[in-house]
Length: 188
Image: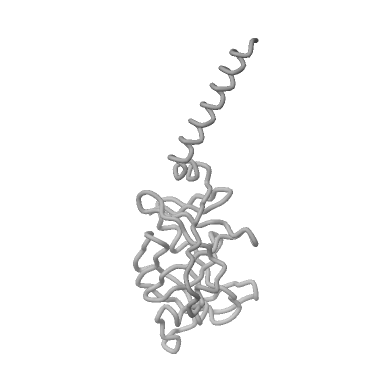
């Protein structure tokens, strides 16, 4: 192969690579979505007072097409954590498909506007700390990004629950819950 042939071959290869890079840059969101990769921008702003949700281990969720959201997997513990608006408060949840219902700690129940003194603790539950009783409540709404459900059954667990759980009384009402290697997709 002569010098002109090598030059032509190298030109074709470089042009192909440039076209592939351009295509990838233009369609990066669709490519990331297909591969289950979630990239979130970290806003640069002045420090503000932190709420309990700000101190959480939840990463920002990504809105998807339609009424869907992608919750990134926490790289430290491998779980899916999310902040959700419950009634008028923001609560940090561990997404738990093994929990039959949404379970709130007393602190998070207060954050959601629930009067703990008016609750009847008569629902037997098993937690990591052993047997306990909880109070059944009806939440007006739970929103994870654009995914909002109304009138969701939940319980308030007075002891033995270190974090609130986003369980199946919420997840089971969704059209689709899909786990990928990097994210959990919730679709209404």
